Image 1 (cartoon, rainbow, N blue to C red):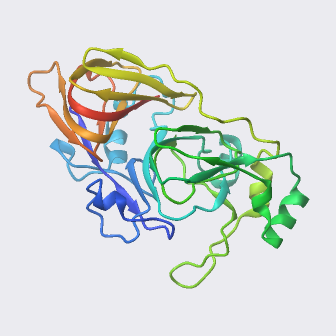
Image 2 (image 1 turned 90 degrees about the vertical axis):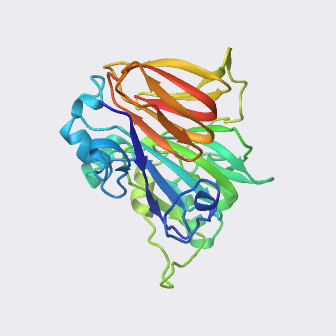
Length: 321
């Protein structure tokens, strides 16, 4: 059993920029490079193995061969999460994702609850999160047709380090000038409500999915999502904080100054996404070489890997189910 370093698939959505290539070392020949699917078994954007006996295979192929790598907490033997880096040079569409029940019935996919960690944001950058007040399908349809949807949407100023948990059914949109790490269910179902009348590289407007969107969205006024004080625990060698926890995933932000230890049990895989700096993961297995990582790289740690030591100077997100 070995730690797997992952190679992502990229996406060239029209709103993307160049930061993932220029600042995060993504060797993907796309302009724009809007997203990298860092840890994914989804057929729309698989990640690949960069090292060891599985080099060149997809993560999906490895986990199909070794479902025990996912862990006992997952009933169906399928990786439940998808981890992305997102560079929004321009506004994303106003959109919504269905829950599991609706997505399975109508799309043959999982629903999509997600979490955003803001890696960086331009001054004055904002995002859309839900509605300012309660709305109806009739109000929304008229607003989209007349270009006045904006007045119904809750806009939130964004700062580096902010965290947003976005349950399925929440209307949302990442604004321009924001760089995000997204942890989500393994799904690729998005219903666009409004896309600013933009056209793609072929001069065509992107498809909207208004009728499906209104079937799945929460039309009530959005909750107050102002950033609240967070509980950060400080140790010799690192600081740690749980930044999201739901039935699909748990995400911990760790700032490593020297090192820290943790265990990868039989319950769940773990994923390390390096947002800044560098380091390496060591295991108790004397035959396992330390796995180095640096800014922009992602590691998959199979369940039952055992006791691990991370040393270095880095900001990382550690994800498990």
